[in-house]
Length: 289
Ligand SMILES: NC(=O)c1ccc[n+]([C@@H]2O[C@H](COP(=O)([O-])OP(=O)(O)OC[C@H]3O[C@@H](n4cnc5c(N)ncnc54)[C@H](OP(=O)(O)O)[C@@H]3O)[C@@H](O)[C@H]2O)c1
Image 1: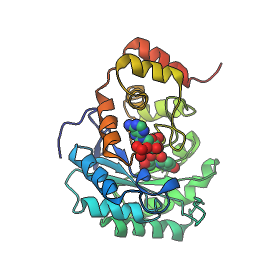
Image 2: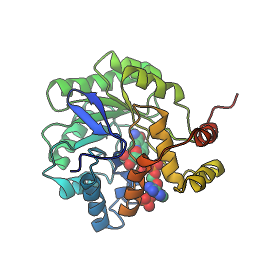
Image 3: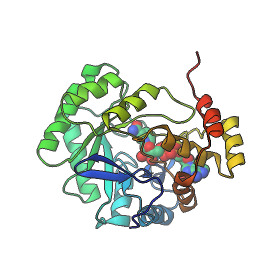
Image 4: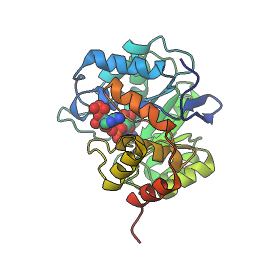
């Protein structure tokens, strides 16, 4: 692996330091993260290219596919190079109609952790994010996060994170075990989590925005296109550069199914955003007063 990747690294804990530019595996499955990839060879090539380029943070889940994407990660990269860290998520399962119902009971969480270990071919998971689903009360996270904290004490998990959570749920989880990452929906046009992004920076916790490029609905904003044209970059690259600039503890995990987009996404970390551009970009998703 190259040791020079634009964007640098972030230390999340004693056992976890990753490149700020990472890669999310969701787009490697079929539509809606269900079923096999459109192009299996390209999926394997994207994973290998990500790691070869120096990325040390892959974000995956056993419910992508389901199971298929972790199988691709293993096939492409096992035995894993030293320094590569694979983050995964538990707390949901898939249904044949491509749904994502919650799977937060003790047996479901234990099974999910073992499934991730088996399918990735690992003895311990570097980072497991507990993905909450449609639950907003802080107390809802206590039981499932306690189960993961127990699995951490047993040595099956090295670090814990939370996903789809409120600030109150982050605090409740921190009362049970250290939280090293928060993974929520956030991008230049969707900034509901502005305060939580800043709170994570204060606490030294990684904030990992999912759908950094808009996910299933690609980001579209005229000011974004304008800044991109002025700086000779693509709108997606500017959206990623803005996130890196937004907070020092933001980690990028853009998803792509192609090597061409992977290269563009990594190059986004080399883009300097002048203050005029930042002014325009900051206004895109700023809360209305
Ligand atoms: N915790 C959660 O609940 C949750 C939910 C969703 C996602 N995630 C994680 O977050 C990661 C990122 O989310 P995501 O993949 O759903 O959405 P995303 O990164 O916002 O966007 C992915 C989309 O952007 C396209 N794209 C990527 N790079 C591009 C480029 N340079 N130019 C033009 N188009 C580009 C991809 O198409 P191509 O394949 O054609 O490049 C794909 O359609 C996922 O991989 C997953 O690990 C977590």
